[in-house]
Amino acid sequence: MSLIQIAWRNFWHRSLSSVLTTMSLALGVGLVVLVLSIYGVIHEAFTRNSYVGYNLVVGPKGSPLQLTLNSVFYLSQPIENLPYTEYMEFFDKDGRAAMVKKFGGDPALGERGGRYAPFVSGGFVIPLALGDYFGEFRVVGTTPDFFEKLRHGEELDQEFTFREGRALKNYSDEYGYFEAVVGARVAKEMNVGVGDTFNPTHGDPTGHGHDLGFTIVGVMDSTGTPNDRAAFVNLEGFYLMDGHAKPIEKNEDGTEPAEVEQPTPPTNPGEFKLLSIPQREVTSILVRNGNVMFAPGMQNAINEGIRSQAAAPVGEINKLMSLIVGPLMSAMLAITLITCFVAAIGVLVAIYNSMNDRRRDIAVMRALGARRETVTAIIIAESLIIAVIGGVLGWILAHAAIALYSGRIEDQTGIQVGFLSTSGYELYILPVVIGLALFAALLPAWSAYRTDVGSNLAA
Image 1 (cartoon, helix red, strand yellow):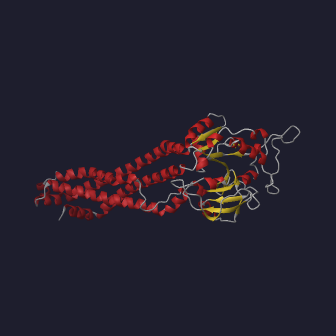
Image 2 (cartoon, one colour):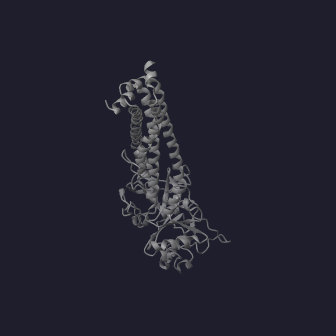
Image 3 (tube, rainbow, N blue to C red):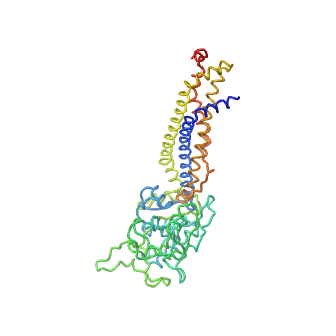
């Protein structure tokens, strides 16, 4: 009979104690695997989604991380709003003049090019207006450029596709201001589709709903990005909702300043009058430079101003991972490793306590010719059996839990996981567990090694 067979029979001879010891080790291993997997999902969700189709996010002065979380991931709260004139600084003279003609404002705004227009030549800028909710999901006011110019995917080469309907369009006789496109998760959880309408709530998910509603014209396919949990509305419709116009101080006679007065555009929809430039604000601006080498220069130029700041999403998310998420996950990993160490101590105690019951058996084996090293190897083999079974079982339990909640994880993060989804760090778990088992077997093995044959046979 081989040493492994003897160790296996010893394992089942004390089946209850062995199974309980193995299960405690399996739970410890399972916790470690879960922590590593959670960290992997979080890291991938943030880092993958920080690689977006634009270089910079521009917003009011404040925390760059908050600006990134709010504008890229639709988390946190907006810092403040920027005047629409800050958005106009990214356009050349012709673009600014067209805005003044369409919306009305100080004619001087259209007499020069924007300060940052040379940096953006060949790229694009997309405004975002935030602050409302559809259920628990953010309502994002933006322009059709969001769907026409942004890309997603690992190579940033995938266009937005639609399960139903289409993207937002610029206003015309066929397309209105009060259109909306919803992400895949929004459509699923709010149970809405093309043709349905909703009234955004102001300020928070349980706030008062606006009187003006939006008609859903498109439901996006799942992208695995934060866009899955956002409802996008036409920026002009967003401005027309109650409370979204920036208050303008009137003249002493009660009339509005001349720069607020505007012509009525020929495409203006009936009773609605577009807000003039002084009444408009944006929460943030997504910027793609025509040449990525211009991005640092433009970022510095914006940050040197007194009103706006520019943040690079990739850099801010790396800071988040290194300064906050990384240390937190390291602390959780340390706790779970301590759990594994405690489980290894349990292995030691279980095997050592069994030595008193096996001293006569060991003495008989020695009398039949077994060497001290052979007996010691049997004890170590028994500990290794517990370690291997506990390690494999813990891995299986952890990945079964991951597979069970894979749908929820994908809904929340956009990351697809399954039973075989692994983290690179998991490769080190079984060797570590085996090392702990060897450590736990030292004292019982030494006790077996020192067993006196004569006294134990006489007893």
